[in-house]
Image (cartoon, rainbow, N blue to C red):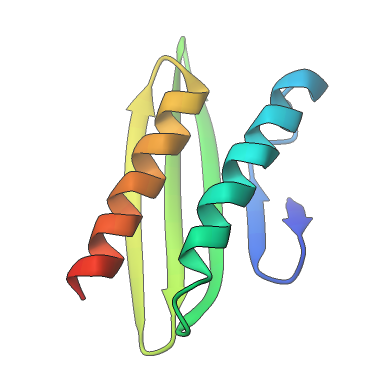
Length: 95
């Protein structure tokens, strides 16, 4: 497991090459920064499963008083990450 600060946990990302990991961290940082604007934000956990030529990312977002989750399965890891955060952002806005 990779921890980024106190509020971000990444599981299954250990095998991502260094170049892609740098890009993933930047994308992840931007999305988490937006979620942290919500005063109820506590932490987020992302789990990556590589299945053949696709990347399945599951995200669990912990807010004070509720938990939200999202999942995406794409051939491009960056698209999958953006899908997961897009879904979480919509869920946060709905609540």
